[in-house]
Length: 235
Image 1 (tube, helix red, strand yellow):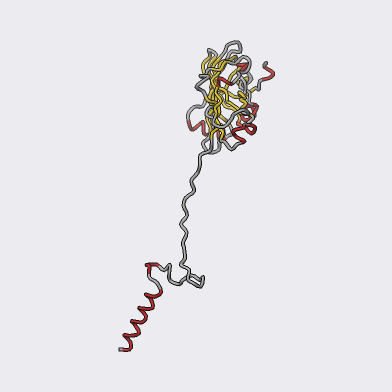
Image 2 (cartoon, rainbow, N blue to C red):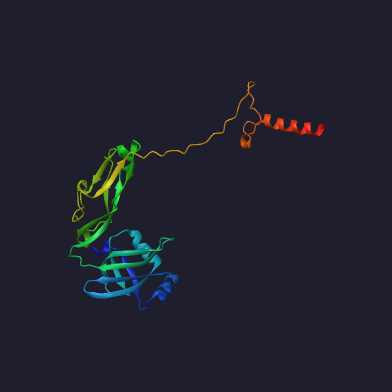
């Protein structure tokens, strides 16, 4: 099986602290640590490109080679990411034995979404569960668990009880309470009311001037005022 696993070549590091960690990242390295296997934890640094290549492979199990030593089978336990750029800033690995089952988490991938009758009728598909807890030998841990949702009708759920586990894998989550996917009727969005200004139309079909003036004054009031001013001049 070893030939089917990617090998991650790293260098052991002795530097500690946030300052040295920032310097490593500026130099193109990602800091990491491996623990387990009965040995003391070992801190290491790995070129960012090398780590990205291995992670892109998608394998759940890899061989960690520290400065040319004998490869150690390991799984990814935790990754930390940059909040903006999304790149890996730290990685934790767990050394494992290939003949002992371990607990791990595996991502859930949905297929057949476009063929779901509920989705084709305009329903909204949601995926409440994106990871599952499993138990398996390290060599049996899949990259992901693929779930077919092509039969989901409107207002129906697909639970873990309807999912077939891959060979050698035991699903640990509650089969009836764990909802993998659901299709529901989309909620209606109320459009805001739009105020429309209206105009007063005269008998000839033309708008009456001054009908929408501010303050509610119409043209007749204006004319009265003009008349009063004229009378005062005559006196």
